[in-house]
Structure formats: C-alpha cells, structure tokens
Amino acid sequence: MTSLEAARELLREFPVVDGHNDLPWALREQVRYDLDARDIAASQGAHLHTDIPRLREGGVGAQFWSVYVRSDYAGDKAVSATLEQIDCVRQLLARYPADLRPALTAADMEAARAEGRIASLMGAEGGHSIADSLATLRALYALGVRYMTLTHNDNIAWADSATDEPGVGGLSAFGREVVREMNREGMLVDLSHVAATTMRDALDATSAPVIFSHSSARAVCDHPRNIPDDVLERLPGNGGVAMVTFVPKFVLQAAVDWTAAADENMRAHGFHHLDTTAEAMKVHRAFEESTPRPIATVSTVADHLDHMREIAGVDHIGIGGDYDGTAFTPDGLRDVSGYPNLIAELLDRGWSKPDLAKLTWQNAVRVLGAAEDVARDLQATRGPSNATIEALDG
Image (cartoon, rainbow, N blue to C red; front, side, top):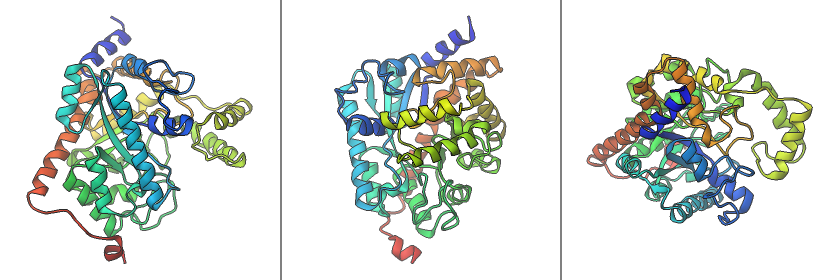
C-alpha cells in the first residue's frame, strides 16, 4: 500500500476536522449568495477551492465555516454582515442535507461521522462582529457560532491584532470579560490573527481550552500571524489546539516579502489586498507573471506540523487550511481535495496512525467537548454578564 493509499484509508475512519474555510465570504463576493450560480454539489474548481465532491475526495469529516466579515466593517454594519454570513451557511445546510450535517456539539460531530456526513460548524472571524456587545456575542452563539477569533487583521477597541500597531497591549479589561463570557457560553476562544500579547492575555484569562483555527509556527516562518514557541508551550496546560494553516505567506519565509509587494500592488490598483474576485485575481496573476512567487509545498506545511508537535505535543495540533480565504495555496494542497497528500507526507516522516488520528479528528472534537464541559460548570455558578466596554475600559 502506498502512503497516499494509507492516508486515504486513515481518513475514512478519522476524517479531517478543518478549522477554517471562507466559502461563505467567497459566495458573498462572487455571486451575492446565489447558490444556483455556485452549486457546490458540482465541481466549482474554476471559481472556488471548495465544493462537496472535493470535500469528499479530501476526506473532510467536519468543517468550521468562517462567517467572516471584513475588519473595516464596524458597528451595526459588521453585525448585519455577520448575520448574512450565518444565513449563507444555514442555506447551504438546508440545500445539501445528504452531505452537510448541522453540528453544535462534539456529540453532533461524532454523529455526523457515523452517518458519513460532513459536520458543519461556524466560526466568527473577528471581535468586530459583536460590536462591543456581550449580548450580541450570546446571540451569535444561539445562532450556532462555536468559535470567535478575537480579532482579524486590524485592532479592535479591546484586543490587539497581529498585523496592526499595538493598541491596548493585548486584551483590555473588557476583552478579558469577552473571554470569560465566551467560556460561560461554550464558545471557543480563537487566537488566530491576534497579537502575541493578546494570545498570552487570553490564555491567562480563559478557563477553557483555546484554539488557533488557522495559524502556523513562528519559529519556522517568522510572520506575526504565526504562533511563538512560548505560546505553543502553554497549550498542554490549557488543553487547546493549534490548527496549522496552508497560506503560503504564513508558512514559507521566502513568500513573506513577495506577499508584501503583491499586497501593495493590489492597493495600487484600487483593490483590497484580500480581494479574491475575478477582477482582483487578474491583478494578482499579472503581478505573479512579472514577479514569480515562491512556491510552498506539502513539505512546507509538514515542517510546521513537525515543529508544532515537538513544542506543543501531538494532543494539541490540528488543521485549518483557510481555503477560499487566500489567493494562493501550496503545491499538493491546491484545494480541499488535497488533505490526503499532507497525511501521506506525515506518514512518510514516521508519524503513527494514532498520532494522525489525533491531528485530523480527535483533538478538535475533544477541545469542543471540553469547552462544553467548562460552560456547563460556569453556568451553574453565574449568570450572563451585562458588562459594557464603557464601564470596564473607561
């Protein structure tokens, strides 16, 4: 049996839980949620990284769908757009019930696996989505959101982003209250995108395991979006999971400088640097033709996983590809069908099947279940917080 055949066999029993996929935003940007125009029951390879046939080919058993909205959205605009993103996921679940199963709990994830369906969860990407309101946070949880990334690319009033200038120095007092309220609800605290100071403050404040839904190792690729070793070292004590991302500019050091130039080129042509519409991609491709980009590979991503396993331990790592949220992907991991290639690479590097089962399925399911347990205990001792940012931060 080849490594690839062995990988596919393993994924049939322990499929991938992927921590982050931006399909809803891609559907918003490309077709304004017209699901007839992007019917993911059929191949959408010309437009998207994601569709059901390729999710099946890739051995995906659970997907956290990102209900991301841009971080330059604020206040009611951010909240409304997040609700539209949630509605998109709900439309997908209603349209494809034979393949996608709604999931709110770890038990739901296991039930989906037993049924051969893809457990579908939601994660909000950025605290701007709650507009400084703990009641809005609770409303998102009630609608099915099971993690919230504390920031996206820009600071918010109560938390610093990895890719912005320091603001409050990590988490403010209200930011710590957000973390505590997420713990009480059972919503996972996601530390991708946040500054290292915010990571450390959140680990100090939380009473539940955290996740990094799509981040890699800073020691392997020195980008602020990645996780420093001292934070990885804290995951065993916290019980959390760091889910490696595939984005080339976060995993390949040579791609960091190239990406900075490509982003500046996008802005010079009047596009947001994260825009993946057809018009924006023409600009991307033209820049790439004139300035060839460094190419990440399956091996590049495996290097991160080797390091993260060494520092955090095999019980504290997972996978979060960030498909449909990035313009470029590594060779061998071009779209959601590529996960078996990564598992085959890790098999070739000597990873055991029990360790790979933890990476693909067991760790992510465990961490959601642990958050549920913490929430049950906290709800028995205290009610919802009605604190305001004005009262706590002045």
